[in-house]
Structures are given as C-alpha cells and as structure tokens.
Length: 230
Length: 224
Image 1 (cartoon, rainbow over the protein chains, first blue to last red):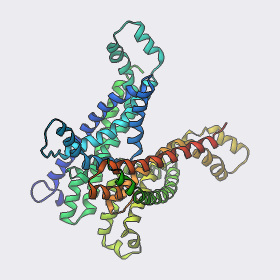
Image 2: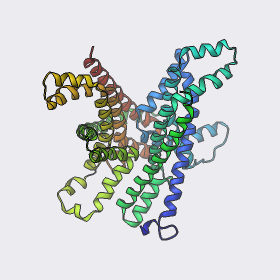
Image 3: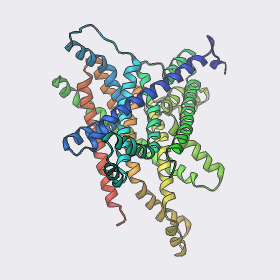
C-alpha cells in the first residue's frame, strides 16, 4: 500500500494524474470521433454511390486494421504529414506534434469509424414516416434534423455509443507506446523503477475497471433520460 | 510513394502474417473452450458459480487487453513460487504468455456470446426434447449446443475479427507478428504510409476472408 502514497515516496499522485490523462484522451478522442461520424454518416447514407464508397472505405479500413498499426502510422507519420502541409505554405522548420494530440487523433479516427456505424444504424431504424411527417410539416431542413430526427436517433444510438465509449477508453491504453503518460505508461514507469510489475499492472487493471464501471452508471442515466416517453 | 520499399517489404510482412494467424488460431481454439465452460457456469443455478463466471467476463471485458498481457508476461514472472514450478517453462516464453492472455480475453467475450445464445433458445424446443424422453445430457449436446452455435455465428465472426486485431498487441512483448514487423520496418525506413498500406492491406484481406467464411457457415447452418 505504501507504494500508492501521494507525494515523493509513493506513486499515488502520479497514477491519479495518469488516470485524469486517460479520461482526457478518451473524451477528446470521442469528440474527434463524433466529428468524423458527422462527416461520414451522411456520406454513407447519401444516395450517391461515390459518396457511399468514401464512407464505406473509411469504416471498413479502420475497423479491419489493428488499432496499434493506426497508432504507429500517426506516431511515425503525423509530424511528417503536418510538415508536408506546412511546407506547401512555405514553412520549412521542423514541427513536432505533441503526444496528446497525436494520440487523441489516432484513437479518435478509430472511435469515429465505430460511431459512424452506430449513427448510420440508428438513423436507418427510424421509421420512414417520421422523415415524411417532418417534411410535410414544412420545417426547414435544419429543424427537420435537429428537432425530429436527432432526438430519436440519440435514443437509439446511446446504448451502442456506450460500447464505443468502452472500446475507446480501452484503446487509449495503446497510446502508451507513444510515450504519453496515461495509466498504462505510468504503470510501466512505476513497475520499472520499483521492480513490482505485478502490483502496478494489476492496479492499472483496477483503475480501468473503475473507469468502465463508473462510466456505465453515468451512461445508464443518460439512457433513461433519452428514452422518456417510451 | 516508395513502391520499391512496398514490394520489398511485402514478403517479410507476409511471413509475419503467418505468425499472426498462428497466434489467432491457437487462442481462438483455447478461447472457445474457455468460453463454453464459462457460459455453462454462468447458467448454473448456484449463485456463487454464476457470479464467479460473471466476474471473470466482467474483469476481462472491462480492462484493456494490453494490461492483461502485461500482467501475465511481466507480472506473473515476479512470483518466486511460479518460477520453481513447471508453469515457468510456459510463462517465460512471450509467445505462450500472449496466447494465454488472448485466450482468456476472447474466452470472456465468447462466454457472453454463447450465454445469450443459450438464453434465446425457446423453452419449447427443450420441452419437446424432454417429452420425447431424451435425457438432459443428450438434449444439451445434441439440441442446445448446435442451436447455440448457429445463433452465435454472426457475433462470433465479429469476435474473430476483433481478436485478429488484438493479436497485434503481441508485438508489445517482443513477438514479431505482422504489426511487430511493420513497426520494425517503419522505424528503420521512416516510411510509415507505404508500410501501413501493405500491412493494412494484408490485415484487410484476412478480415475479408474471415467475414466470408462466417457468411458461408451462416448460410450453411441456417434453419430454413
């Protein structure tokens, strides 16, 4: 237990900060994922074949390739790509992107592919009559989506989004390979310096279990809120 | 685009894909037995046994696979007692540690898939078997298990693909699987995009094959 003391003698405060980092990366990745889903879900549902193709390419490739490989692509290729874009604007200095941004982006793209599938499924299972009724009421396109489709879609999507959240949360452990100090990386450091890997990795497992447990409680509340009236 | 590098690395990555497939198949076979065992325990009437099975699947599904591998590979070696037993022969090899972690992980997911499949079997089918005078054991092996397998095929297909992606974590414990070799080539040539296209292509091809095999089996074993 003394290994977990806060302060200079224990690893309590370091692990606490690392847990906050894991939560921060997961939430950022989830938000980045939603933005990707906002782009690719309409593409997948579009009536134009070429748009469908782009949407399907994204979800198929990302869901068929290991997360670790995507992370390596971003880790080794990220700054190169940014520098290439910057050089087109005439900026030729070396740019290093921070591990938090690379990591959240890599996990975000993965999480986005799963979210896209969830939103697509949710929209497709809304009854056709709802779309027609929205149109008949003469609402603007924006109001049709925002007031009628979106609330129904969220109700259907939340249970599956909670799975996406769990996947995303667990995937953040993989960005420890890039050196970002989240739970896994901090446990690795602590295990290395105390020569007690069993304790620290088991403690990491407990922290992840705690995070998944607490977030499930929270999501269940949301689920109740959005299924009012059903 | 460095096409020469892509052509050069293709045979190396293909060889590494064999390692990936080996890891995948061994852990799936072991995992299937673990999953079946825990699904049966889960449906046991004894509340302690079913709670134990639930706890197993909760812990393994609620923690990242990476933590599980690290606990088994780095953690268990720390226990002095284990080092003196025959288990040490297995646990000092990263290959077997990875397989143990993968099998336990996929076992947890498989137990959930099989459990829900067992629960969706209509009671009428079992009652029909009983009224024909078939023993409970035969009902289980000849009626419940085949129906459960058919029911769980689509979900299990997804699990196989998830597990195939999971084997990439073997590279974190020094195994040279497809991702391990890809990372090695990337870090020596600094050409991430080219290597990603080739390695990702091989992974996608394997996903495609698995997907179609499962689809074929689903058709073959469908009821009507």
